[in-house]
Length: 87
Ligand code: SF4
Image (cartoon, rainbow, N blue to C red; front, side):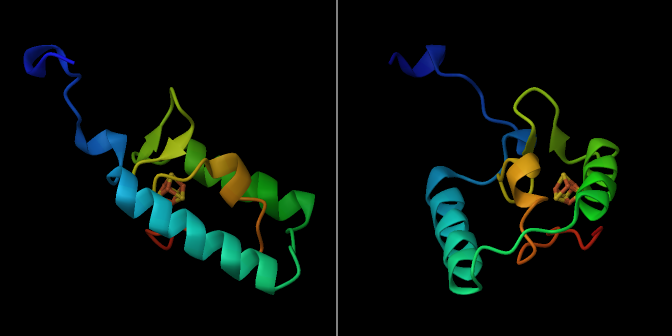
């Protein structure tokens, strides 16, 4: 792709691909090694309310701008936590 036509990445795009890949790998390993535990629906809903009001959420992609995770998946996993310690 022509250098000038490349989309400009902003802070809201989250971490780069290598960091996202490493973060995802660690999350999935933690989740798998704990037996794939999910949180109760009520806790999941509370987490999503917090994410939806968070300035770091990329509303178009529904991904966290800090860790790059899809918040709907991350929020269901008992082994995950918010990188800004909001939940
Ligand atoms: S996981 Fe935390 S930092 Fe990321 S969007 Fe949700 S509340 Fe914000």
